[in-house]
Length: 92
View 1 (cartoon, rainbow, N blue to C red):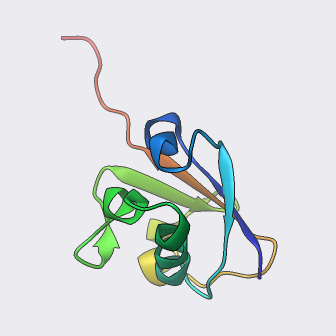
View 2: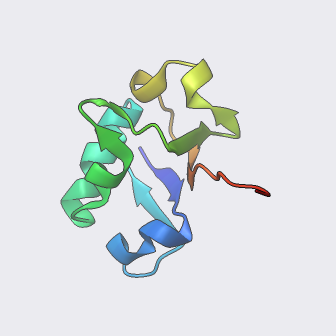
């Protein structure tokens, strides 16, 4: 099962600069574990204590997985997962 994972600039150091990589898994948790086998260090930047990190947003086919089933969200062949760091800030 091939799943495209879009990587934000801040995490591309783990993917040798690649903007997108392929992975596999039946759930997001399995996908992120699979990515770790080829892109050492990326898992810890996305997952903490078995949950998605608070300041990382993950989308499955443009839907925020926090409103689906979080890290246990089911995946299908051909899905696209987008990882985005949360953006904060504004005018003081």
